[in-house]
Every structure is written in C-alpha cells, then in structure tokens.
Length: 315
Image (cartoon, rainbow, N blue to C red):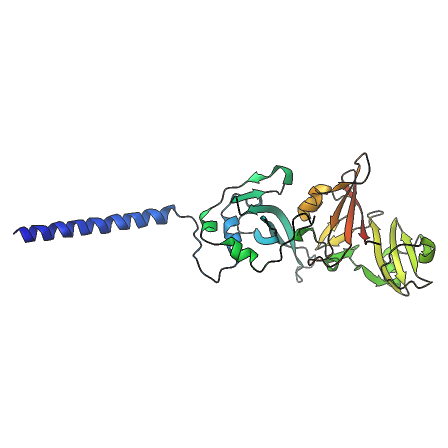
C-alpha cells in the first residue's frame, strides 16, 4: 500500500513539473519580440537590419516600417553608421521605371555602450532610440561586422557616406563630368570667355597634358578645362538655372544645407567656415570609397543654400 502511495506522489509531482515548464515556455514566447537565432550564415547587415527594425527610429513613424530599408553605410572603430532609405520611381514615363534611393534617416550604433542613436535631424543633438537588445546579445557583432571590414581610421575626417561618386553626377541632368566640346555647347551654349591654361598657370590640371592650346571655358561662373575636343568640369556654379542631379536627386541654388545633410550628414556636421564672418560654408566629399584619390569635392554654401561645387586636388 505504501509503495502505491509513493508512486502516486511521484506521478503528481511529474505532472506539476510538466505543467510548470509548459507555462514557462508560453510566458517566454509571449514576452519575446524578435530573437535572431545563432547561426554562422547570418550577416552583419541582417542583424543590424533586424535590430534597427525593432527600434523607434523617426523614419519609421514618417514612412512606415515596411517601406524603409536599412544599409550599413560606414564601419568605424567605435561605431556603425546606418542609412535608412526608401526607393522611389522618378521616371516620368510609366512604362520605364527609374528607381533611386532617397535617404530618410541616419543612425549610429555604438557597440561598446549598446546605444542606438538617431542623428537624422541634428547630429549634435541625437535621439537615443529604444530597440530589442536581445538581438545584439545573440550575436558577436565585432566578429560579424569588423572581421573583414575596412575600418576608417579615427581622425580621417571622412566616412563612406561622405563619398560623392562622379558616376552618379549629371550636370543639368544630362552630362557626366567629362564630355565633348559639342556637348558643352548643346547643354550650356557658347562660353562667356576663354583663357589659355598657360596664362592662368594652375598648379594642377585635370588632363595633365600641358598642351599649349589647352584652355579654360567660363560659363555662368563655372569653369571647364579642355584638352583637344575633351571638356571636364572643374568649378560648377548653380547660377542661371544650372543644377546637378545626384543619384536622381536635384541639387540647385534652392537646395539648403539641411537638404544636403540628408545625403552627407557627417560632412555637413564637420563643415568649415571659409571666412571670418562664417557666412560661407564648405563641406568636403571624397571621390572614391577606397580613399585612393588624394583630392576631394568641395561644396560651397552661401546664406544656407548651395552655391557651387569644386574639384580640389593638392599641388
């Protein structure tokens, strides 16, 4: 009889244990939001995307969590810079799509502190975001994101998002940086004036030919260098309706420095005053992702609006 009693007691405790375990599992399932499983195939971009998607970033309230896409724009020694963007069709012809990326937000993830900051509106006064911290805890981001990444040295002054690739620029929406003399006249008309390079004596030239008949063409404040029939932009002013199209985004005399901050937030944040009064600002943009080119592109602003861009090279 005593053996039977002991048997029933063991069965009772066993059932209660199973019930407790099931209840605990149910509670864990309900409380969990997003848990990224550990595996060796997940990428840095995938983890960061899920981490950001679990946050309260400003862009999500404006454009929706579904439309906004996430990309790691810069891997630094202490932080990841994250671009939030949407894809728009800018084509005027319904049968031919022209899809371009449009940045709608910028975030920074500081791995040591675990802070996720929204720097979209003001990099100097960032907004600390909430996010599901278990996503970062489930993965070694140092290994995922930095093991094979090229890290920009602290103090270099540039981030990958500060790059303005020449292939993405269209002058007046039609011309690349290099074109022919006939293309120049079709788009800009006849030059206002012409000067021989040897008379201007520049310390560096674009074509680097030192030919005696190389010239500068001047038009509406802009300066173009020629070599034979080839023409290249050196200075381009947003005067008389002239503009550039960058990745489908128009930049002209009405473009504000706040507009440019959406494209190049670090460069705008690190802008330099070019006179004592601080009325003329300049930002510096790299020409390549690898940092091979010594020069850079300078974009000037007057009274808070874009004035011109200039290709600068060291002598």
